[in-house]
Length: 166
Image 1 (cartoon, one colour):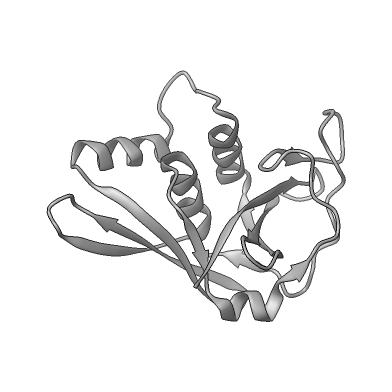
Image 2: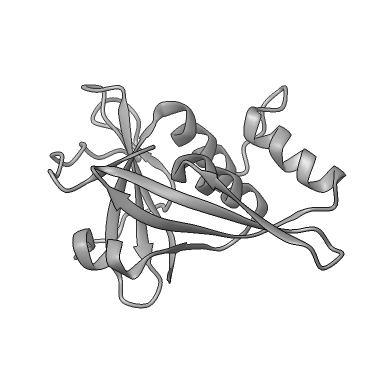
């Protein structure tokens, strides 16, 4: 497993899909995961510290972890098979107990962003679809769009090797 970090969120007005780009911390390879606008919005809110009037689903999950004295230790994006990514969320209970759950990478990354937990990706994923991008975005985690807002860029053309979130 290789440590990755949120690199960019991209939203296009042309499709309902968004792309979550993760970047390898040591090595710099980047890969996209297709996610829904809801997870993109949640990740954007967490990165920028934006609150909602009422708790969102990922906030409820984080509250449940706190109420049960559970810690999200890490998220592992474990596989890409038939254009679908797979992830595991690893938890500890404060009493020496550990367990993990299967999760969609978008949900796992959204929750990890809210808890400050590290995210890792299988080396095989980075070897298969990771690329080194020459330019860095101005604001990590900011949504990029083709239309109106100031911190926006057009959506890159879809890459045939990108995978969708489960």
